[in-house]
Length: 469
Image (tube, rainbow, N blue to C red):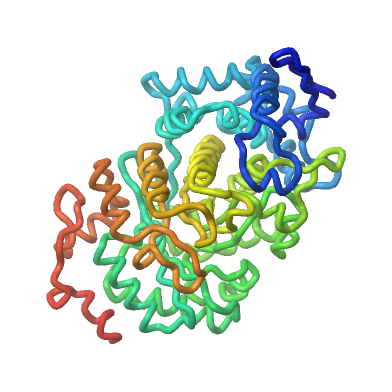
């Protein structure tokens, strides 16, 4: 179907839903690289105008990636809840935006939004995000509640959890222990203590899992650990009896992109069941940790949709959330600026993408977090990250990622520091996950308001970590 709109005497035409969605997207370098971005602000405005008038039901009959050739599309269509969709099925994309903003301002907004979430497809959610301002994305996300639990509870209103990321270039246990101590003393680690390993070997991964589990048991920490190896490596270690808490995998929004990651949807479902079978959670049984990022499908040359047209990277990112929600995960985060300026050129684009991803993830029922980050060759700096962190705190993000000094010396990119988490919790009166906060308070590391207190390491029970004992 061809869509058209006249602006200032010029008629713009869009050949199908794929092109319309792409041209309505706020400017970003990845879409320019893929050749699907609007050629001008006027064309972008025309596309957004048409998109706003498009009935939501269109997305159930016109798909952006063919049903016959893509298992993510089949998952989206085959699991769609028409009963939940009924409440908004009469709306256009623009009408849905108005409904979300109005509902977000009402009492019991979280329950009202949650009732329609199973009826929303990723494409519907991506479409409405494209015609929303940043404040709209924040307002709706802040009114939306999604929680999950394992040994700590994630996504509870008024909390902001953190992943403590103690990466080391050679996976030196002493370096990992030192970074872990640093983060724990700053009140970080309540979402997960997660290591990106330097190698994916099963034995090496097992050694790191045992290191983290020894720390957990030694200090009786209500936490979950994860070594971010490939899902097949983790499943092998589950069979060997390794202390696996969370099962990690990077995912994407097309079958082709997931194939490039070496995964299938049945494989992920099997991994989810394997993780849950261990019964290691104490307050919940959500075991999956999933990461995404705008541009991954383009990197795999798996970004083409109906008619062979390139699908914009934000729509493909949102489709990855359909894969995630089928697995009922504990944690999902977009590594928003990690791939580089080829996909998100500068701080403005990174901030916008982070807010979009967070909004879309929550609106699809996910406990959504963001790795607030950038690469050193992007036109961004730590001031941009401060801005995005603050906006995500207002928007009710489930968690963020923190590394020593905001500098990941193994992956070679800039993220948030442990101090940054302290800042946003204090400024916005946010608290750690309740189980983790209780542990901090018990050890005298936090006060009754959840604020982390200065601790003399010499008097801390965590001293053994610093000494490598």
